[in-house]
Length: 247
Image 1: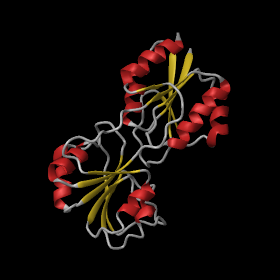
Image 2 (image 1 turned 180 degrees about the horizontal axis):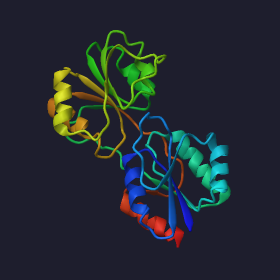
Image 3 (image 1 turned 90 degrees about the vertical axis):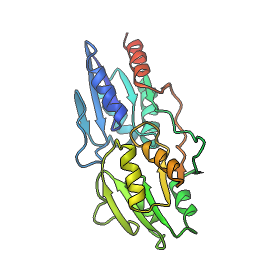
């Protein structure tokens, strides 16, 4: 029996776990960071919570005798991706990253691409209109000083009671989102600008389409630099390479 650890939390990770659990003589364990209060439970074995940095991940990989490590975390989970590649290299096991392609600007898009969440907040300092924040709840504080802007903030779970958040309204919801849903939100709340991370994938792309149709500006936060290592862009390729590594 060989063991595969999937660092998950994304739609791709759930799909990957569901498909790889069908491989004979392979045990799949999915690790969830535990940032959402009611996470979707993946197929197969799973664990919830952090590892305690790179040192803790190395210890876990050794203790559980993991044969292959697959990083299918969010493209903006830069620290865990770095910990993963370093840990796999330290103990000498195969490592693979499943990285969905980034969104690309097409004709009709009105994007301002920025390097960070902080740069996104800075870009709004001279704006006095209504902004849709679709960055989750972890980094809302970066916008809290912009008292002249009303924010619609969408996230899976509400912020903690002690969190510093911008003025506006919180909308708790989980993707995937339909184009009709996104178009309705933008029109209902009279949104002038969307702030989004370039997450890629289909689950949240409808907001970008709706913004294009309605002529709404998008402040697009670029992805952080990815660590070195073997990367694939889709689940079928990930499974094919996994099978090679397990053989």
